Amino acid sequence: MPKRILQGTVVSDGNEKTIVVNVDRRVRHPLYKKTITRSSKFHAHDENNTFKIGDKVKIIECRPISKKKTWTVITDKNG
Image 1 (cartoon, rainbow, N blue to C red):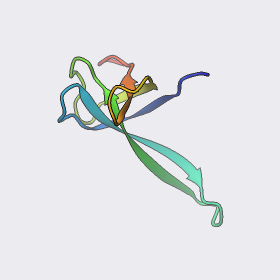
Image 2 (cartoon, helix red, strand yellow):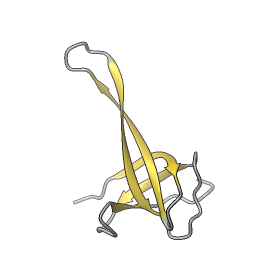
Image 3 (cartoon, rainbow, N blue to C red):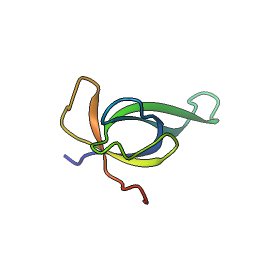
Image 4 (cartoon, one colour):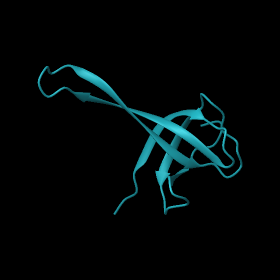
């Protein structure tokens, strides 16, 4: 089964080796048919503490690293 890859923005980098990534997705409202934005936050593993608030990153599913961390950052600082 393929691992999911999501793209989002770093909203917190206060923890050691962990960042919080906000992922937005657009969905159509079932009744009013208007496009609305839904967002989710994911805790991701950042081994070298390289990412800061506001950076665009891609994350991929991985084995559970801790209670909340099941994602790992896969993009480098430039991309």
